[in-house]
Length: 101
Image 1 (tube, rainbow, N blue to C red):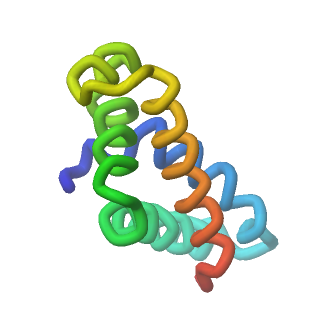
Image 2 (image 1 turned 30 degrees about the horizontal axis):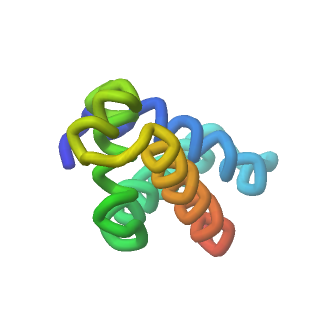
């Protein structure tokens, strides 16, 4: 996955998980923790999600493809695409709770 993966999805996931890790650490320490969290998100996309969740998440957040277009390409309803995205984000968010920075 290239550098463009640091996207809206990652920012949303990072923001959702980051609050638990912020404290009075120095800015450089916080930046190292942030980078570790981003790397975890990259790995989780490929190791924790189902192929369909990954496909929907990447198409929506990375490629910027509209949900209806994704649904048409996959032969499913837009609601199904939304559910894959929602569940994929939930999996990554849930797994990140156990991340030790």
